[in-house]
Image 1: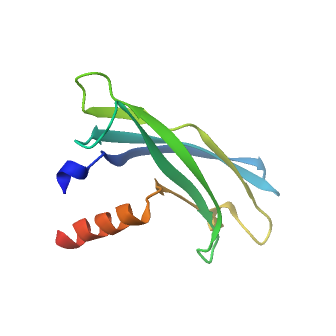
Image 2 (image 1 turned 60 degrees about the vertical axis):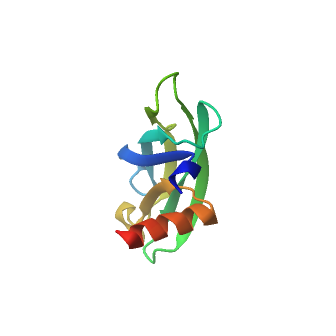
Image 3 (image 1 turned 120 degrees about the vertical axis):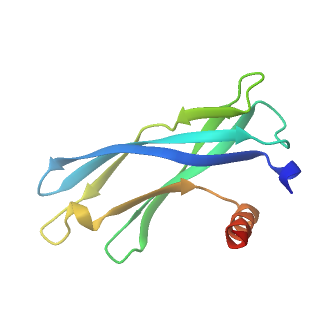
Length: 127
């Protein structure tokens, strides 16, 4: 039900860069995420905590590492929509003769609860 909505958010940008720390041993990834959020009718206050994750997979697409971050979304008075950036995330990925920098994949998304995941899947199926 729409009246139960606390926050609706979407990732609007993902900015980053990859640089070799040492061509033989590591590549460093630096990135930030842009978000647009809309405050829902069920939001209790003007600040909402929005969890998101950054995960790294290898060539077999197995998740090798994942970290969860929290973005505090603050809605000024009389404002229901806000845009903000997440914190800068830095990853150091090992490279070698057997593993190139392009073998790694970095994924970013919202860290959903099981109920939020079910709701999002049912909304997509209805489209």
